[in-house]
Amino acid sequence: MHNVTRRYLLGMTAALAATAFGLSPAAAQANYPGQTISFICAFPAGSGADVIVRYFAEKISKLSGATIIVENKPGAGGNIAGQYVARAKPDGYTVFFHTGSAVAGNMHMFKNPPFDVVKDLQVAATVNKQPHMIAVPVSSPIKTMKELTEFLKKEGSNASYAINNTSGKVLAAIYKQEAGLETVEVSYKSSADSMNDIMSGAMAFAAQDPVFSLSQLREGRYRLLAVSSAKRIPGAPDVPTMTEAGYPMDQVGWFAMMVPSATPKEIVDKINGWTKEVLGQEDVRKFVTDQGGDIFISTPAEGQEYLKKEVAAWADYVKIANIPQQ
Image (cartoon, rainbow, N blue to C red):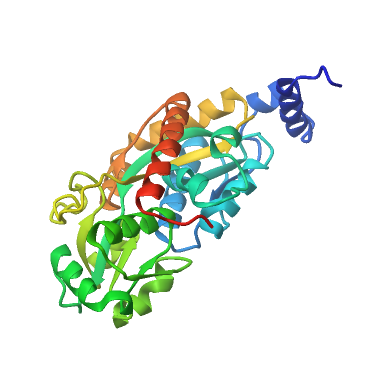
């Protein structure tokens, strides 16, 4: 037993996953997809992330002929969903559709992460890049980041702000530190859960994802003050960047489809091929832009290398933002 290599054990794991359906590993790969594929979303139904996951589940299902369902497993900043996929059978039927930036950040924001994103997960395909946004309700007299900073300095720790994910948490924390603010963070399960407090004025501002923020802008509920990317985005060209407001940063999230690391290359490549083809469709490109993002296409190897770099970069983000580990 001591001579059995780790690679052999991983191979046996993949083989068992395939033979569970009465197929050899090679036959299972050739017949993929032969059953329902689950896209695991780390946020509740109706959230910005959920909108993106369900959109691509439908698009890839039509293209591939596969039945794809979305399972929502929110909690612990995405760790619950990530751990679920990391421990799943490496057969391509359980796909973690989440922001690679968020799982990279979690490697540094938790003392004991339940899984190692680089070792336990493989990026099958990247989808988009998108910044987060600073928003206030339209009823607020605040119209610029300068006015927001002046207000928050005057209020001190009596003012609060809303966040609901890793990227928003870091964006707001860096802003607070750079501006010398004492504003209190309030965490919500989803962007929608924070709406009542934001609209009532109980929260001075929100640091949220672009899907939700832009939808609220279009509905006339939000005023967007800044985006976290280095450049303005096509989906909201009139919204300035945090850098323009005097808080230099280029913090951009990116969605990816990740699978257990032992998933056969042939299956990983198939998922990648589906995603590339879908991202080439004109209506999909418009959807991504309208949701505040830019198309991001890569090979699995390029995606995995980008993930590694992000894990290293987020160590600096968390340190700069002075975020204590959970």
